[in-house]
Each structure stands twice: as structure tokens, then as C-alpha cells.
Length: 252
Image (cartoon, rainbow, N blue to C red; front, top):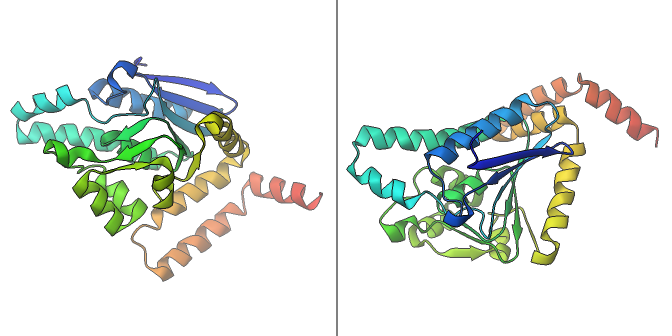
């Protein structure tokens, strides 16, 4: 695996660290390939219960590599479309992974880096962290990541962030629904570690069903959503985790 992403597994948690601290963990082609490889490893490794994505150094991720972006101005429309689809494939793979993915955000999560965090199932933010989509300020569009942003915070907040490029602190990001939880900087590592521990100790099958159903609800009608819920409810009752978990609870 490339050193662009360092993957370590301990206690059921794979920690995938974006590893370009000198470039504020900017995403380039090599990092996209490394992220896909890490997600594949997490999928195949039964000991991995949850994936944590974080950045090395002071920031989570400052977005796409600007040198690569500038060079793309001389490429053909089809070449740039393919490059964008390659980046989008990371988000598709994250959605399909039947294990929860948690972003641990400290420092700045900007542009494509903010999109990477938003694509995670849970975002844990340090109070001093910053979130934003400043692409328009550079004559660019947060085109790929807008899909996650709009679904996460709704139309009005999403358009405001995409059109103005303004930055949100950790507390404000949590207030608008962009971050799941925010912790004081001094407590961030301990609190984030506890969330990861809880997820790693939960039933893998129950979490997989939860994640699958959660995203399948996109675009379903109310009635279809309930029917999907009934299907998931029925299937989940047949798992060994269901029998063991309920039996253990009743014995307390």
C-alpha cells in the first residue's frame, strides 16, 4: 500500500491516516488509489469492525492537490471527467463498505477534504477544527462533494456553504448537522477513542444492516421506506448476533 495513506488495525479499528502533512494532506491521484486500497483492505479483513479516517499533522485535509488541478486545465474534457469519476469512486466505495466509517477532524477540512469527511458515516470534530467548501473562491466548483453536502445539511445551508465558501468552526459545523459531535481539543482523542470503541464492540451484522438500510432510504417514498424496514427487521432476526445479544440482555 502507498505511504499516502497509513493503515493500522488495533482493537477492531482500522485507522487510515492521510499522510501528506507537508501538503496539508492534499488529495492527489496516489492518495485516491491508496484510499481505495485501504477501504478494500477494511472490507476483506474480518478483524476490522470500524474505519477511522484522520489526517497526519495539523490538518485533516485541505482538499485536492492544487498542482494537479492546475495541470488539469490543459487536459481534455473526457480526461478530466474520468479523473473526477475516479475521485467519486472513493465515495461510492465508502457507502458500500458494510462497516461504519468515522472521520476524526482536527485542523482544517476543506473542499474535497471536507467532502471526504462528509462522506463518512460519523464526523467527530475538535472544537478548533474548520470545515468549508472554498472552491468558488478559486474559480472552481465543489461538484463531486456537493452530493454528500446537500444530503447532509439540506438545501439552504448547503447552497450557502458552496456559493460563499465560508468556513465553519467545529461547534457551528455540529449545529448545522455537518459534524456529528464536537469535543474540546484537550479531550478530543479520548472522546473519539471511546466512540470508536463502542462501534467496534457493537454487532457487526446489526451495524451492516443499519448502514445499508440508512442509505437505501435515499429517494424512497414513506411507504417504500417502511417496507424496506420490515425486510431488514425480518432478516436481522435470523442472525446469530440477534439471538446472542437478546439472550444476554434478558439474563441481566
